[in-house]
Length: 398
Image (cartoon, rainbow, N blue to C red; front, side, top):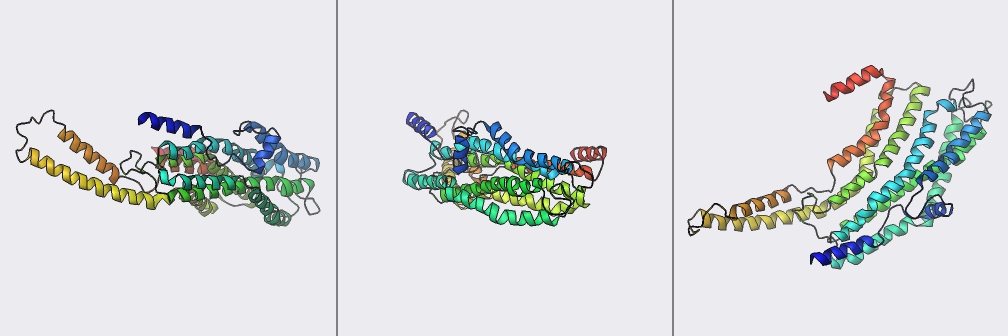
């Protein structure tokens, strides 16, 4: 039995499993352009291409038109923190996140079969859920709609915003209107970044729908599993896989707030609601889908406590009759396995009692939140000196 189980697990692991990012029209285009391989390698090429395509042209055009550090500019490009963070940090993070998510999230779907969590009668529905998610990931129509949203809706608001900011920025002509650098920013650079962001959120939708479909299956879960999640604890690793995306969102927010502080006279304390709200929203988006298993896990816990409670009742009754009522027939207490069995039964019941209703671990949530909040910490320097900031942090720890 053990040999056949290992053989099955090996076959399942070797079979092609669902990957959230390994596919789609853009992926195929990048393969033809030799910017990726079959497993999303050569990430440095894609990062360099994105920088050369989205960041370098506005910088070169702004330099030619006197917007880089030119006099009379309220927002020179050299000091536009949000611009540089978007295309030198956020865009590369969104690209590198694909490789990280593929390597960490891809094996998770295989775990359902490796651990025999999918019952024989549920194999086809599980396969359909996987195929449906892969079809959405590969959809040409989906990415075309995302691109259409970027240019039909995104540019409308972006163009109005940058034109409305007036002639003082590096993206504008002294006489008003957008400069060549501004046109590249509005019609090329920002749409690329917006498309990358929207595609990630579409993938998260596919991931949530896949988990929802799987959560409705009759899985082989155990209330006494040591991961305290019925055997689904491995799903909690998905939150760690998405840490680069949390960091990207944090850097994006940090850049926007920094520009407001340096060029609009705002204070970092003015953005407390935005920061807290952003953190809560990210947790809902990235960790929320794992709560879809709550009903199933609650049922497993309830049934497990009932069954182990009944077993425990029968065992302790027999234990009392044997050892407390003098029916042990002179059997020595020392060396008897009855007491150890009673302790093991108690541990099993305790494990079922401590079972969580979602495969979420606190350390994964904290790492995710830290990735989002870390890029915002330097903004505290705008309110106090480095010495005071260090003293405050030391005071919090000690």
